[in-house]
Image (tube, rainbow, N blue to C red; front, side, top):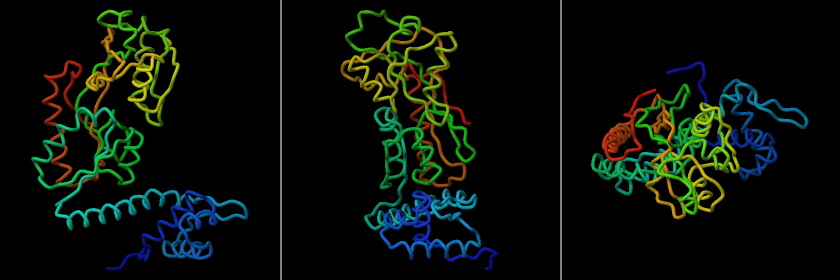
Length: 317
């Protein structure tokens, strides 16, 4: 079979290309991959000749990607990650494992929802291996796009062309307060009671996400929160609450973690809640993935009657 774009492009060339794309300096890139600068430059030139496309604009003191080079960055990451996954899968078969699924999950899922899913999955697919990594939402989105993970459990939905999101359930919001402040509040807490207190908030990311939804609750009641600390993730927020540095608004499932020094009170105001979702690439095809999704759906259904903070069944986006 012939093609207008037959190429001898290989993994090594792609690794060299990514090093230059990251460093935008051929000398530093050569040091990074452990070869001399001339052979690195020759490999990049050979790759450009094979692709019949210039990947870098080389100036005296400046190197930058061409539009074609920017496109190749994404595909190069995917190819390298796929090759690494294939190598890992081969070694797993050698050890007797039949297959492997790479899963990313936010902190709260790792310690609450996910264990039951993994137990169900292991019954459905005995001897399969799960590679589980705790990841932030942003890390999971990048991981899905780059082929590092095959499925993510995160706060959704994610509005990206190549990612499919399935909402498993919604969670009511609850207020995390230092245990030393428990007597200052009743059985529930209104926004007006906490609006002037130091708020520990999860920092905004590149995607509109959890942080924005919490702040929207204040906005909808024309209140301006007193953000004292911004953190990268929810469990760090709860740690700061335990240290007495402020209060935080968190999904109800966080209560299951029973952090010392923290008590929880439901929020009086009605909100749409926070979604918990399963995310995959739209082009993903894998029997293992299908089994994992079925296990996640089943466990979401089982959780609904057991946990009062969960109040909506799944939906697809």
